[in-house]
Amino acid sequence: MLSVRELRLIIVPLFAFVFSFLLYCREALIHGAKSATYIPLTVSTFHSVDKPPICVPVPAPVPAPLQEDPQELLDHVYRDDGILEVNPDGGHPIFELMDLARARWQVKLRRASKSLDEAVREYVRRYNRRPPKGFDAWWRYVEKHNVQLPDEYDQIWRDLEPFWGYDPVDLQRLQAEREDHKETFTLGKNDTSDISVLKISFGEEIQWDPKALLGGADSIMTLLKDVQHELPPFRAVISPHDSPTLFTDYEVKLAALDAASRGQYIDMSKIVPGERLGWLSGCAPSSPARKRTKSTTSSTQKTFIFDHQKLMDPCLHPELLENQGEFLIHENPGPQKLMLPQFAYCSTALHHDIQIPTLSGWIDDILPRSDDPAWEGKLDERVSWRGSNTGMWHAPYTRWKSSQRPRLVDFANQHNGTVKVLVPPSSHAYGKRIGEGIEIPRSKLNPAMMDIAFAGEPVGCHPETCPELLRIYEWRKRQGAKEMGNFKYIIDVDGNAWSSRFKRLITSNSLIFKATVYPEWFYDRIEPWVHYVPIQVDYSDLYDALIFFRGGLYGEGAHEDLGRQIAIEGRTWSRTFWRKEDITAYVYRLILEYARVMSLDRDSMSYDG
Image 1 (cartoon, helix red, strand yellow):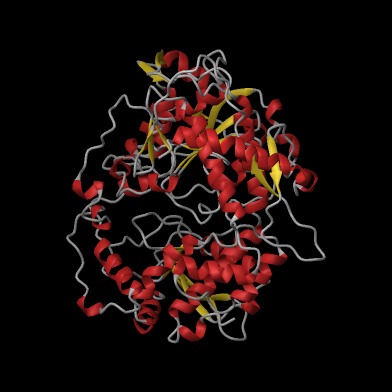
Image 2: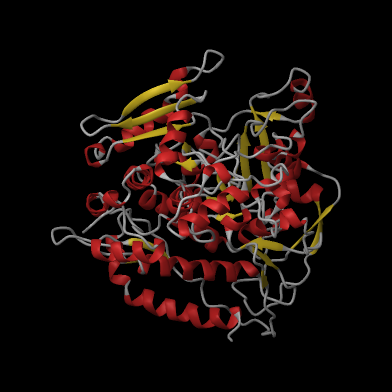
């Protein structure tokens, strides 16, 4: 069997040949992104006779390695939990991670369905059932608006598949009962009406502005306005809050999925929830979290992410339960006894809220464009972040110091001790061992590499804790778009829930590092190490990733060309794959799927073309 390194040496030249053959598409790149290392490839999933084929940007391979002092390199370790363990006797892993990511992305683009018939066949292959009724109209929308990757909606399947194991009579009863649950609203339509807010259940004790809480409803109705006449009747209960609320019992979900796989329904009266174990109730008994398996990674072992979605799963990475506000804020929570059909704006691997994206934080572009210089015009090579201390309630009785944002600010502003960092090789020297790394004093490293601080003043804090926050941290001015545009590198982290600033950040000409526990709606449609750089939520790989691209303290070993490439590809992806039309296509298909699984006659709600 070929090693990863041997496969890489075969794949990269092959892709280089294919890309060269397809250079004729360069002028058709729809947003005109230009780069010496950026090669667009015609992979339009479909086009009509009266429209030219669109070109989807495909990343160029990393330049062929220079064999400086060729050495026998050993393979890195790719773990089942999505982590790459660095072998000191291997090459720098980021070369490898970028190559493999490009290979995955190209495969995904090139296998995309190009016709309705192909899309139906691919749907049946993936999900073992016919598409929902209205799939042909959805396809016409996708085709008209050049929505790319029309098969990549597995997140919808993950969200809705357990409900196929419920009798729709039971589902409709659960949904009707949930409409009266406080802090929800119900969106829907009948056969002849437009989509509207059908019910509001906020309760008198809710302190927030109802109009603000209904902002998501307005956003969803805006997205579906032009296609609502194609949608079947439905009623959807939606939480107005940023974070998910429906904690899943693993045993209940397993029973539902098992029933769904057999085309049967669970008997709700016989469901026996598992043992109450706090957050661990959401994990399989064999998972690292439940087995309390200690990581085999030593404190000095260098690691990177190769599968970002696996890194978001606390069952695989139980340390997330100790360092993320989403999990720290709840002490020993109990799961829902049943899975409930309710929507939210985000979810986690331990929740079963059905994700429905909105336009929160969405922009088409950064304007004026002068606020976002080209890569070469961004003069600050530190990684930047400004933000509020959101993430959880800060009080004497909570573990807020362990949450993601205080940890980030602490991480970037420490001056004591040393940090071991990997020395990036000169040029593209695959053939050089990465080694164990070298120790650098934090007092030198952080001022040169980090510009990370809280902005404004403390929020979400107990009267006793607000003064403590003011005393502990430096609070700087908020960062405007023009100031942010000076930085080549920006990190994005979670707040109270998912980060609504990611769309704005990835639309820029900066390289974005991202650390998160929320698998958002677009993660089947984006490629880490091609469009952004995934970072572990303990930030243990941040120094090494940054230094690979920007170089050491004096810029030595920099691979800025590769950083620039990811920045450009991220921006182009944002303007090609995250348009309003792309969000509409997702929500449109989600509602078709939801209406079918809730229907008393699911067969009649399936596409028969």
